[in-house]
Image (cartoon, rainbow, N blue to C red):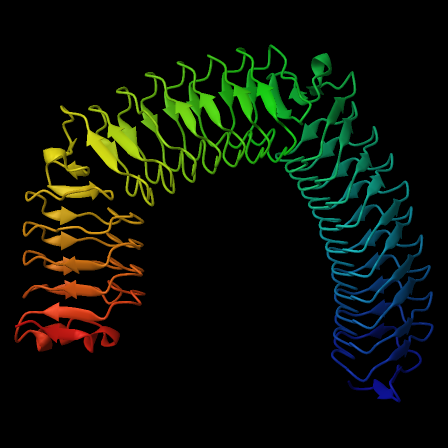
Length: 584
């Protein structure tokens, strides 16, 4: 600490110095009070950083600069006055001062640095004086008790995440001097019900109001020239959107309750009361995302394109009419958990990634003959879907397309499907019937086996609770029976390989006999088969992954041929070796 001392909890700062050097009192836990003498002009960085017992600080008018992290983590400090003379407050200067309830900032301050008051979780109100031109990024982020902000004329920019996660903030008025609202500026201000954007604002940053779930209305003045991506995502209570007439870039034509980019006719932001006008050609990505009060919507035939996640997590949406102009659906309705049925128009040729993922109430869907590809995760977690007809036009099914469709009981793979992604039917536990149409050049379900077999390799790709594995099968693909309710299965001698996760989560399976042809058992092949009690191994399995029988808690006995105990002691993990029993 050099010339600086602490006596009876009070900082002793020599007269005549101009600057308190950085780290001078850093982490001095016994420091409770500081009086900075007149004449000091600069409080260096980290000077009082971590002084967790500091309750009182007096800053003289001679100070012009407060350095970065100067008072960060002064967790007992309850109030602070920034006097006339101070021009700048450095980054993180008062961050994590969690007991700070009162801040007075003088008119001399022109700059508030990034994170300056972030995590001041007891701060309830703040007045930004007229001298401040910009608020740095994250300046008041996580001020979770902040209910009132007064911003005087003079400020031109509200920085990135400046007030994000101020979860008690209910209203704010942007003064006429502000031209730019930064990215994420008010993200997750979940109590914010109203905001007044004045006619000086030209730019609203990306995700500026994302997660403002109590915001009911928004008016875009005619000065705004740019609205960033996801500016109003997750504003679930939004019922009124108005663009002031005369705006050269955006409009809300026909009182549609939406923001439309005029030149491209793209609807960028919608709400639960939106009516999509004829003439709109595109619905932008995330336009209605998180509008949990939206129950129905009609998309006019003028719309030819819908952006990713356009209706993502519209959890009350029960009815939607799609136009005949659409050719591609991707991620549009993921998380629409009330949607029960949907008809895809004949114009659609591709159902894209995550198109209807987590539509947990969806029981029926009609796929037209125009569709050629269904991409990965398209119907993932459609847990109420009992049946689906895949038309003969489809040539490709992506990975995890029907993952966790727990109610799906039957599936028919048409003859034109020549591309099947991995784990397409993972955890379809109710599946009882699998048929591959005759004439398919790549896959078959020979001998009415209730499975999908890759013809050229004789590999069983997908099985179900009613599968009978034909003698010609040589391999069981990874995840083939994952999550199946099968109670028993006979693996023929022709099988040489059991892949990773092949029978994982087959909870009803009690016994399994590995035939003599098998040479390898993959990673977690029988993992968490919770009721599996006995395993029978043949003479010559070369490789058994250490996790092949992981979490098979009821497994009591592993039968091996006579004189093969040592052989399997070298191939099974230690926790299974004591369960080995030689057969007579």
